[in-house]
Image (cartoon, rainbow, N blue to C red; front, side, top):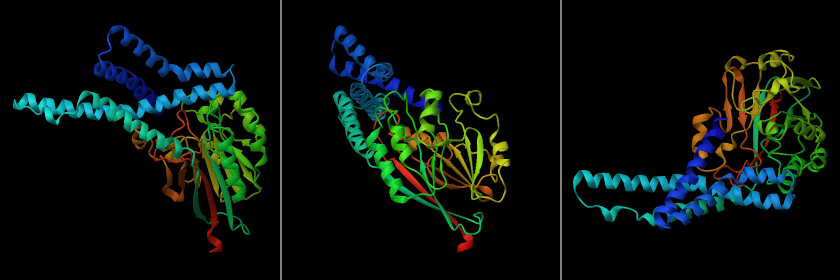
Length: 383
């Protein structure tokens, strides 16, 4: 919720800021200012309006309109800090001038430049980010343990996180993910939430593709916050039709080889327990699993409950996208203690936070490429 709130505030202020910058720089006059303001207001609210249209309109038209509205969003979010930086610089120079009585006009940035330089930088950042978002990285991680049973030397796990299947992220991205999974041939496949982005109306056919990927130890998934946004009932149907076993505040032991526990994401909704999930706490779920077996905790958000450390060996999470776009990626480390990659925890436990394979909102990533993660749990006994 904090990420969404931060992003909404930045985006709203950014649209207002752009209006003021254009109005002041161009001197359009009242009527043209009103037209400009209405146009920017329409673009600001376009993602919500287009989402409503997508529930009834065609997939192609919805995708085209969403691309425009989300790229506008990315433009505004990147434009704002650069414009603010230049305006702050001008303010400081003018303040020094007033205090010293000297003229430093030659050191100030012309008003038009404070508009066009940030717009140019925003375009460059987002053009780069658009192509970065299309290149799927494969990350590999090895975790050593003494908890694998005799005869099992290693378990390879494919972690899919934050794929955000929807009108923007669809068939092409999923095909890349499936191709890499088929190549790696993992023993276990897990989805750590936000497999879906919004409504499932236009993407139900993708369940057939997801059914196609299989693993000897099975496929397991947990609910992320976007599954609630998508409509929980339809999201559950989609995930289960795709061949995943949903772990909704429960756990299981697979072939006496590995424990897997899964937690509903309750951060934005607070209502997961009342919609089909087991009424158990994380500690109760983990404590109920057989001891001495390597235990994986699937949890969409990277929140770690200190009292539960030691009851699991590896927590797999996502949600953060490593910020996805500038400047949100500067805020993520302030919001999440574990915001990307692998971190060791006390009592021999660890957490891995995926950047995610898809995009939420703008189809743009900046210094946060999408990832598919393969984790090898390796027995120390064999070394």
